[in-house]
Length: 231
Length: 223
Image (cartoon, rainbow over all chains, first blue to last red; front, side, top):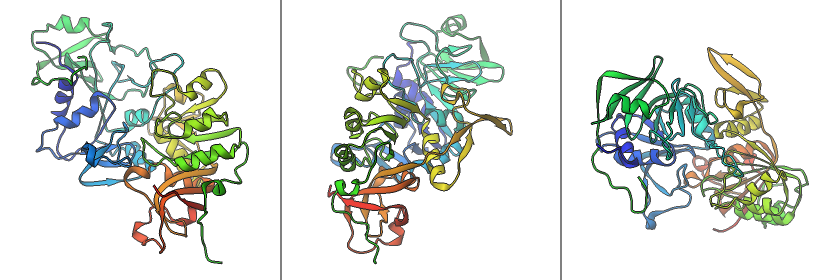
C-alpha cells in the first residue's frame, strides 16, 4: 500500500479521539484532524487564543475577523462553546486540562523529546507561539508527521538534532507509514502499512523499533489532497 | 467629579508617552489589534520603546509600523517570523543587530504579564525546561517536575482593543478579541483602550469583562 497522504494521517489520528475529550490541534496537518472526527463523537476543540469549542471554518458570508483560531483562520463556534482570555487559556493548558494536543513535528526522539518549533532557518525570526506550553503540559501529546524528511532522512530518532520544544512529552506518533507509541522501553509499532516489512520500516527510522505482537495494518480511506498540494 | 475616562482622540490619549516606555499591545490572529492607537503611537514618535506583543510580525497588526519607524529598541514576543518569503521589517532589523528580541512561550508570556498585574514577582513553570528558551534561568524541581523561573513583566502603557466601553472604563469584547487585553491592562501603569463604541449608559454588570478600574482612557474609533 502507498504511504498515507497528510489528510489520511489526520484521518487515522481522528479515529483515536474519544467522546468528551478537550483537544488542541496544532497548525498544519493537525488542524485537519477536526474534519475526520466521527459525528457521533462529541469533542470540544480548544484553540490557544481562548476559544473552547471551535467549529468548522466560516463561510465567506459568515466570516468574522474577531472569531479566529490559533492559525488566524476565521472559524465558527460549536454549540456549547465559550471564549476566555489568553491567560486563562494557557492556565487550562498548563493545568493539565487538555486531554490531547495533536501537534506537528520535525523530529521525535525515542524518549519522547519533541522538536517542532525551530528549524534554524537563517535570517528568520523565531516562532514558538504556544507549542512549548502544549507539548510540556497537555495530558497526552500525539504527533502527526511524515515518517522521513523530503530528503529521506528519518524524523524518528534516538536523539533530536534540532532545538527541543519539550522533553519526554510525546506519547504517540502517526506517520504516513506507521503508528508508533513512545514507551519507557522505546518506540513500539502498533500499526504499519500493509506490504511493508519490519526491516523496511526500521531502515526509515533512526531509533530501534519494537514491533507489537498484535501490530495491525495501517489503513485509511482514499482522501484527495486539494489541487496544487503535494503529498 | 464624576468619573469619565473618555478621550476625544487617540493622539490625545497617548500625548504623554515618554521615550524608553515599556508598552503592551494586545491582539492575536487578527482579533483585538488596537491599530488606531498603534498608529497614534507611531505619530507620537517616542523612541527606544520596548514592545510586549504576541507577534512582532502579524500581517493584520500595525505593530510593524513602529518597528519600521525605528522607534523600537526591544521586542518581547512569542512569534517573530514574517508571513512572506522575504524577511519582515522586524527580522531585517533583528538580523542586523539593531533591535533586541526576547522570545517567550506564549503561556509563559501571558502568565508573566498576569503576574505583573497580580503582585507576583516571579513563578516556576515546567514550560521551556530543557529547551533553548529555558537556558540561563534558575531551575528547580517540584514533585519530580523540572521547572524554570519566569519573572513578571510590568509596563508603562497598555494598548488594548475592545468592542464597547462605558465612561467608567468598563470593557466588553467580541469573540476572541479578548486574548491578551485584560492581563495587559492589569500590568500597565496606564491602560488605554480603543473601542468600537462608548455606551451612553453604564454597562450591565454581567457584560463587563474587564472592570473599569484597570482602564485609564478610552477612545471610540467607530469601526
